[in-house]
Image 1 (tube, rainbow, N blue to C red):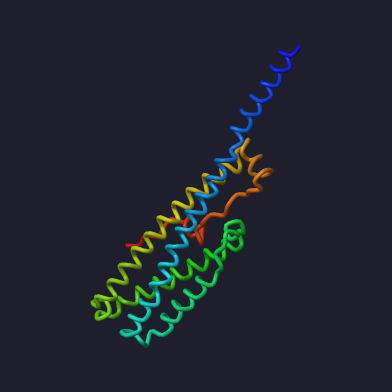
Image 2: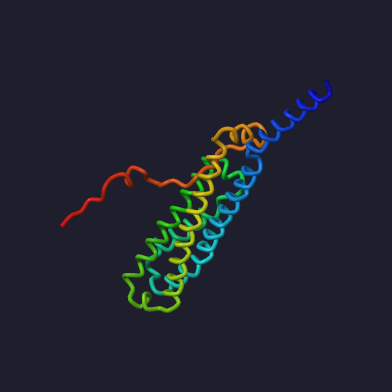
Length: 199
């Protein structure tokens, strides 16, 4: 009689161990931290770009003071991009995440117009300080792309764990985790259209 009770107890313990090892608790926690770290790197690179912009604007201002509208649009876009509060909740709120993404895209667009402006000013293009700043901005844009790619990969991995069975049960009922928002293309319809080529 006693051996049957012990055998049943051992089976319950063994079953409990098998169920808990497959629940994904630690994996979900680890992936959540990985996505936060990847997101921090994205923010770090966006901040680096924001810190470089005043130097670029001031350098261009010396050569192209009458291009006031372009310079002001860059300054305004930078102010808008840096005004969005970046908190952990931003990753859970799709609307706030989209607002952040739009502000960063607006800054990229304004910055692109500013750098294109340099083509009209040979002296500005020849200025070593401007070339150094332009090189730093290009490097930062590359770093942003890499950081965003890493974040996208981590979010995809995390979102799979949140949706797959049985870890979805742990995510939902034990950890209260939802899928995280990810970067999207601003105008998906224009990306889907093939480019028009004219000769």
